[in-house]
Length: 261
Image (cartoon, rainbow, N blue to C red; front, side):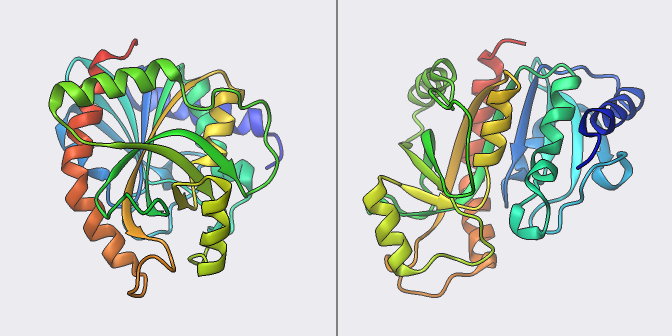
């Protein structure tokens, strides 16, 4: 994407001109995990297609809109839908919204995704707090602490207070668009991956590069190939994500109330 800064600046100026909120926190809602916005008040919605230079979501379960509103006492941007490398976008386009969010003044980002479980102690519906990632999409800059220890501790404390069960684990980012083979999953397990998906890693890298703190939670919607015996289905992914989404929204909503900004 040529002239990235100028394009991001144009997007940011459009968003500022069409919204009154100036959040310091942003949340990205993955497949089937859009219910968090039902709790927003004073919501102002902009469709991606109307924001200059913004890519457009093509995946089922991704609405394709930026919401600026209040979640409890906090002003929050919600990205209802993300962009994937397998959709044909470049990595710069996949991460474009985060350059815009940085220009808008965002300091903390919460990422969510629906993914496949590799750790056999997990089951569909499990919520996994990301502790680290394995990048199978390309090179990465310094990633000593890709997911903020401060925010992870806050999330764990909040889950304990609410009686929400969760796991912690390592997310492996895979290019897609296909589901992985059984042999690949065995290899990934040997590398230390607890779950695998097709997003989140590029976004994490760019947010770290831009100096924004990151918290990420995965919803395990299926067990990976070779562990799950039935064929994969995106419809099934959405079904499990919607079912677990209520708990995830309650957890993240409470975490966001405790975040600075």
